[in-house]
Amino acid sequence: MNNEIYEVYAVKYATRNAQRRDHFVGGDPHEAPMPMDYYVWLIRNAARTIVVDTGFTREVGEARKRTFLRTPAAGLKLLNVDAAQVKDVIITHMHYDHVGTFHDFPQAQFHLQDEEMAFATGRQMRHARFRHSIEVENVVGMVRLVFGDRVSFYRGDAELAPGVSLHHIGGHTPGLQCVRVMTERGWLVLASDATHYYEHFETDRCFVTVFNVGDALEGYDKLRRLASSPQHIIPGHDPLVMQRYPAASAALDGIAVRLDVDPVK
Ligand SMILES: [Zn+2]
Image 1 (cartoon, protein in one colour):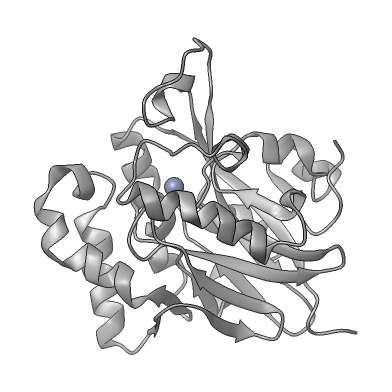
Image 2: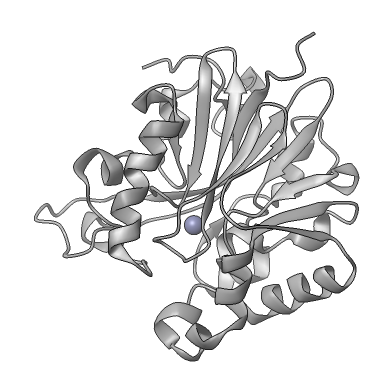
């Protein structure tokens, strides 16, 4: 058993309808639907179970008119993971759709970039443009976790466990981090919102919600450097992920896919 190689899954917990023009800075000339999926990710082997992001609650999802499918904890349960027992949760950034169910992980240590907490608690939250994607109750909740010594902070890149590392990207938010994982097929990169869709990094365009366009574009190069190939980069919100990778099991078709095996198309 090699404890530096992991299985990796994407678990879909929500979705919404949207148009192509909604997703690119400067719009898009094509009038066509471009739905958005919402995921959390699971990294595991015999020695470790690590969850990446915690999605949003049904209440927040409905208030924001998302189609809520299941709680992230319920999705993880389908993969035989008990959220209440999980010891490590990586928070890629503080947006509502990535940190919202932290309370379902009562044993977990949360792994977060310094810069992201500074962003979510600092002067930029005076601006509606930036606080729109952040729920104040999530921020207050994470601050309480800091006081309980349940948040580990990072400044830049760091190894979390053998074969699992965190990499600061910024751009979409100042402290956004992605996760690199060693798998049977090589280095996989869970980009989270460093690239919402494949198309963003493939065509060097930016998602509309962005703090620093230059850092977001530079981030695509970093994703490519970290991953064994562009096929090893997993976007944060692309429905194509569910099509390109095999279902975790027949029963989980449309709910969870396996990312550590080669894409099926
Ligand atoms: Zn997101």
